[in-house]
Length: 72
Figure 1 (cartoon, rainbow, N blue to C red):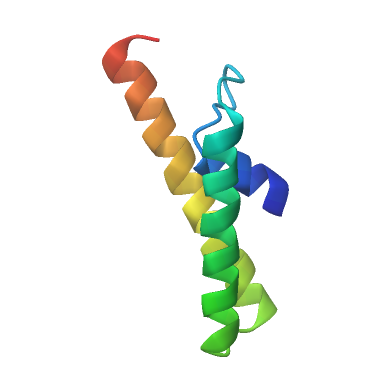
Figure 2: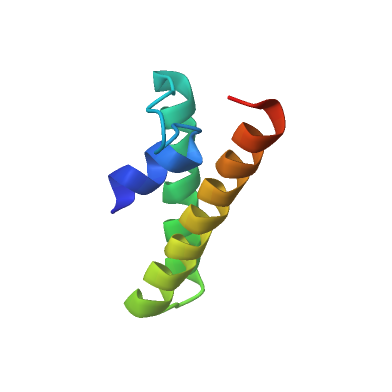
């Protein structure tokens, strides 16, 4: 799940497979910082999964909105 989350957050579209390595690396960095921060505040594993899932859903919604707006 973390690998898919990193790719989606990095801008790779699930609908068309567009993306690049640098953006995916930035997605990995975001996921790592998110997971580390949640661990530091003492969040349980289910809470970490819910928050990571929410971030993925938001990234997919932003991608869909961008595609619709610019007609890609």
